Length: 144
View 1: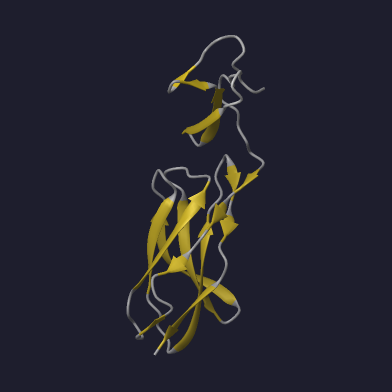
View 2 (view 1 turned 120 degrees about the vertical axis):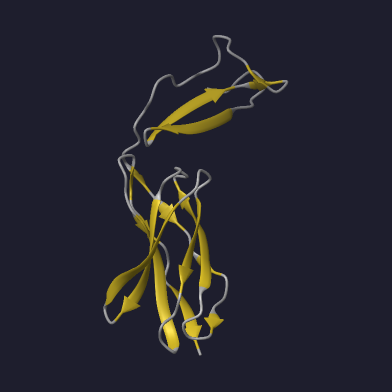
């Protein structure tokens, strides 16, 4: 439902890893509470959500055994989201770092390429009660 002026605001927050949504029309910076404003009251679990995670190294090339900062963002932006940095070893993935996403969904990890040449990495967001986990695209850090 759209308010009188056609303007809507959606705000979301989390309570115990469950999403809450509240819709309201904005008028002069305040949320109107008249009967024509729709509100979703209470907590609705959106368990069908699939998480999303991005990852970007600060540098794509570095010296062997040198730390490279990897930053990214997770969605949903739940503070406390568990992210894991993984490095490809042969055909499998080995966990080489762990962080907790902040309240805005951002995180920072450190990758330290142990081998000369191409080192493949990815970041995995672990699933939680309100969403399924996700894996970033693979990225390469080349060590010389």
